Length: 241
Image (cartoon, rainbow, N blue to C red; front, top):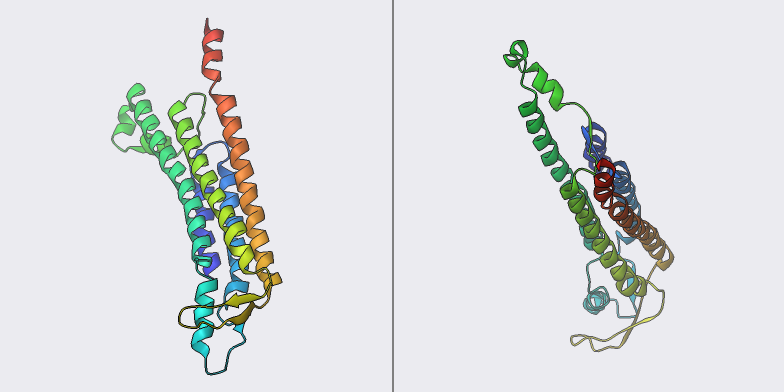
């Protein structure tokens, strides 16, 4: 139910927006798919404390928890959610930029085309003009293009950080190998293991696949946008001459 509640505002923003740009629908599609993947991947990690067992005395539960804290010494699900929020924030940041560009274009259009007398009183013409669909052209909006490339760079940095955490932190934690634990309070040593490592690893592979996909698409879109839109300014000048 919580996942459906989270999908509603994302889908509504993607469908109801009056301003469009290259790749907008794709980024919102990634946001929806990744939210579903997070919901599926979190389930094997929901009872992580219960899935961590050690060969200790039944009354020595404290040492098992101490070994658990030593082994899982980095955030897991909370870091996944933070990376997702970072991704959605970069998408919404682009929405903020496009909204401001649309507002500026709307003001410029009103200055060039004065309102008719009969519609100036009611404001009908201005309302209709404000709700028309607008497709932004990066050939003309160079500032927006730079901001768009900046948002793509933010997504790429976030995905690379997430991939680093998966390969260097999470996958070794659930490798299925024996864990030899020894802490200051519980010198031990104790032999511990994490149950259901296959399911936990599979959830990590799913998130890794999506993260690599987003990173590759970000790189491709960044190069495409930079190579396709930036040189067009000089080409248009040559054609005008």
